[in-house]
View (cartoon, rainbow, N blue to C red):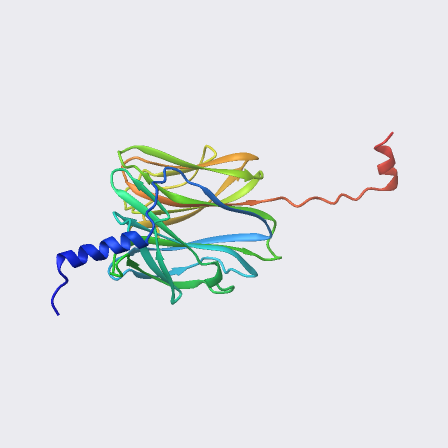
Length: 277
C-alpha cells in the first residue's frame, strides 16, 4: 500500500483540528474541586512512556468506601490536536488540551474524569495514549488523583488545583498556586510535574515553609509525584515551586487538611451554674 499523499495528510490534520476544540492559553491554575467530609486522597503516577506510550499507575493507598472524584492527567509538548487515553482497559476517547501555555515551547495538559472507572480496593491501573491522529506518541508522564469517602477517615477538606504552568522557561523561576476556602490545620500536600530531569535546585514551599524538593523525576525520568506535609491557615494558602536551571511542567496540586474533632467537654450542673454567676 502506498504512503498517504501530502494533501491527504494535511486534510486529516484539518479535520482533527475542526473536531477537537482548540484551547485558550491558560496562565493560571483554577481550583477545580473542594469538599469536606470523611475524605482521603492519593496521587499516583507513571513516567517516561516512550513509544508506545503505555504504563501502569500504582496508588500508594487503597481507596475504600465511595469514590468521590478521580482525574487522570497527562502532558504533551507541541501538541494541541488532542490526545486519547485508555484507562484500566477502557477507552476514554479523544480529548482537547485541558490547558495550554505557550512560552519557550508549547506545553499542554490533558485531563479525563475517571471517577466512574476507579474501583474501591483497586490500586493499579494500566494507561496508554495516542495522539489526535490515532498514532503512537511519547508521553513524559501521567498521574491519577483519587478522592474517596470512608467513615473510618477523619474529617478533612480536600482541594484540587490543576492546569499547566511552565517553570524555569527562562532560567531562575518561581511559580505558585493559591488554595482558598481551607480551614487551618495539618495538611498533606501533593504535586504532579512532568519533563523534570535529574537537575537539582528545585524547592517546593507551602505558606513560606519549605516542604519538598528537589524534583528529579522520582517516578522515573521526566515525571514526579511528590507527597509532603505542611500547615494551612484560614483563608488563602500558597503553594509554590522554584527552580534554578531545570525547565519543566507543573500540572496539579492537591491538599488535604485535617480538621480537629470538636471536643465534648462534660460539665457538672454546678459548673454550668458557675458560668452565669
